[in-house]
Image (cartoon, rainbow, N blue to C red; front, side, top):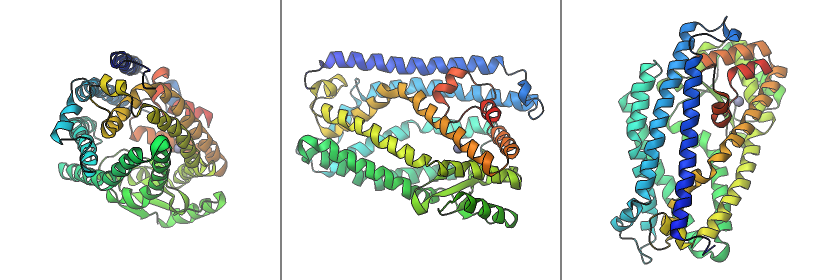
Length: 415
Ligand SMILES: [Zn+2]
């Protein structure tokens, strides 16, 4: 693909894709804004008994505040992207590290990590605003500046501890494995991702939260029974101190093999009755029964194969580098430019990915219905929705594109 485009042609294609991506998301935000606002003054008929008008209005205002922030972030993202590419930001970073083909092996990895680190710092004002202004205003924030910055420094530290060896290995593979280097890199990347799935619940997540085995006397017996009935052979059920940072509640299944675990946020557990906990647990066990994590990984393996194939073809394409504002064809620049372009050229896939994720939720709900009580699952979902001030009236287009979980009305009706 050496002569597929000229640098200018590719830059134009890049700008068209970037505009399409940005305008699509802004338009969807706008649709959601109008839809939520229009429906904010009356509680939908179906929820009249359970949700008060005040709760409904709060959810609408919260959704709207998040939409406004997300729109500003989108536009800021475009500015940052153009800064790194066409405006020469990446070229400057190369100069700062005095990178050339004879640089020592660790310098390019350091440059890649600095690039990621700088982007995290650039987005810091948004995280600060989100936590201490937006979430605070709606009464959800439970964190303080100390925890916030401790989290921030832990993330940066992890980035270097894990990122440095990974970046160095990828650069080495791409540089020294010849024509099919992309296949070796893909194999390495996929193995790393699977290892992370396994390691996340046992090594990474405990660095940020406390996980304790769920040992409530009343609950324990019913939980053990349910696990046995569903053939769950993992590490068990854990309680996470989510209340340390936010009052939003959640429950999830994570990990692989003997390390997989079901996690309840303490914030959610506080709100649920014993039988409701059972129904949520049964839902998570539904994900386990249907092997949703494994299926997700398999699909990831397939999609990433295509991505790495394309990566292999573009590796030495001058038009790709020059079109995005970088001279020469150095692998470290290529990796950054490739990952920056990826989301812009693949955003249209997100409704399909979310569609399959929503299908999984329905499957897990159906499983829960069989193994626990349907009415408990409904009330538990409603409490979860209230906890998170999710809107009851999303715009259908917005939901199709963004929602990884079905909206609450569709979900309850299906149960
Ligand atoms: Zn689920």
